[in-house]
Length: 472
Image 1 (tube, rainbow, N blue to C red):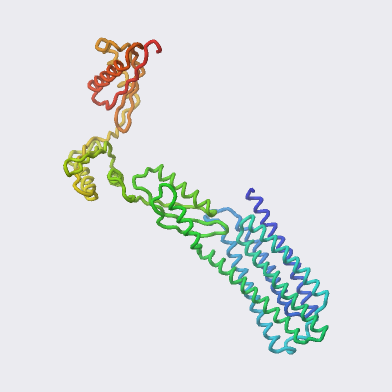
Image 2: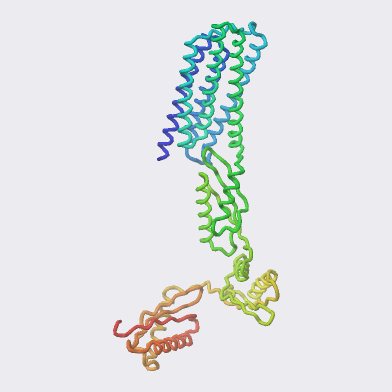
């Protein structure tokens, strides 16, 4: 469902809560004056604070739904947590007042309002029943909206007002007990009213402590340990992740901000690292609504192949290597590799670079390892397109000049020259008699390739595609 519909639904639920709270507090004030019941008075005070809390919730939802901006890069959802925290304070203040008044009536009796001051009636009992139904409808509606459109403020409001159902039930029972006591001459039942008020206070303190703990945790960025452990376990099983180093979480409203540090193979490319980071974000998003930041650390994997270790060392040093190979010579392992250096480097400079690379490989090698490094220019200056075309024309002209030397050859065309991994490679098409045996064609193309490389030593590889002359 679109976000604007969710916003409208939450705001409508908050306004409904304000309207219901206003009706209830009015009815309870009238009823407390009429009956003189401390239980009803405590409920009126409770509902009065409910009204204030509902207004705060309504305002906080309007603010928290605003998108992130320059002053609030993490959004405005913390306003919901603040709203819930204020509601907790109001609940506890209500409970303290009720407890004080209840004990004064229990201790001083008639001198503090008196038990006989309570004037119960069936109408008062019935009116409390109506209030109980209103409380029940309001609590269920708020809970439904809070679950459908995750909102910390509405959830706190729903939890807050669900206490009204229990407290109103207790006050209703106390009012009924006092009415029965006065009607049938059982004076000790008059104590049920202040005791009912104490029961209401107990419910308020219990719910308030739970709500206060949750909202305080949200305000000081306490993340559930179980959730952190679940996220860490899930990230550790993402393909490409060696280990999960750290997970940090903070909550704002119904959304989490997650910072996770993972270790990746140090030879992973930037594209591989980005793909792994995306997979981690998706895996966390499947667990909890979250804005995820992934930090990656290069690490050597367990039982890392020796060639990967060498590539990792070269990569960390910013060196380009290729043609990596190894073979055993007696009891020694001989490693050969090609190292590319700046073409403007002197031999002394290039040799120092090669020696540094060799020394580090030797330090990490197990057993007797000998390193042979072939130094070659990196070839940063790549010829322009015109230079490549001119070389292609020269190669094509040269091959066509060999028609007398290769009787199989009829024509050479479509010669292309390009650079691959800083090497010049050539490809071209050669037309030949379609009735020739494939072995004869293979021998002819191999010989042509060798002749071209002899003529143009700057060319690293030549690939000739043979085709029947009649199909050109």
